[in-house]
Length: 220
Ligand SMILES: Nc1ncnc2c1ncn2[C@@H]1O[C@H](COP(=O)(O)OP(=O)(O)O)[C@@H](O)[C@H]1O
Ligand SMILES: [Mg+2]
Image (cartoon, rainbow, N blue to C red; front, side, top):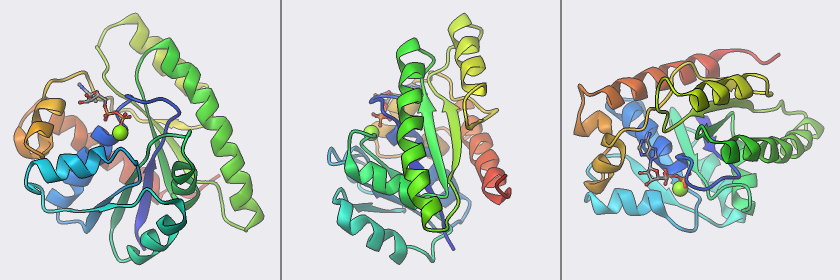
């Protein structure tokens, strides 16, 4: 059974596509059967993959249509990890992705606007979770990851404190603001391939390991 991980937030530009691609690249590099479902009509992940001539040998499926997402994800059950990148919660396919997910990964930039948007995202997720409960399924695990962090700043600490008080788990690993993320994307790769010994590759590895641990924990 695949672990389905959906990246969702109410907020654009928080790093959903970046983190989805980085995690997909990392797990692929570790020989896990990994694929990326691009459920965003803007198709940023699809473009990233095409740009580099599919430099990372993962399968990227483009499926922004709500009614076909469930079918696609069920066909991918033989994978180890399925990452679903979304357009965010203004979009019905993102709601569907959350409905299908085992883990909902919410990237958050340390800014007051992003923190505020987390509240709205969690509100949407509660509704999705209620539908699942009615169907006898448990809630997905909600995981926050701080992204584009500038270390040592008051705003980064505030963001972490605020997230800790919300209903979700905050990853110990934070992604710092690093040029390796956009730079590696130019060639259709990720820091894991572009700069394997770099600090970004290291934080991707740590985050990926934490997520796998969380996936193995029982709810409650
Ligand atoms: N940790 C990071 N450090 C530097 N730039 C980042 C980082 N994460 C994302 N970015 C950049 O921020 C922008 C928005 O990220 P993106 O992944 O497209 O967000 P979303 O998919 O949530 O809209 C992109 O230009 C991306 O390259
Ligand atoms: Mg995106």
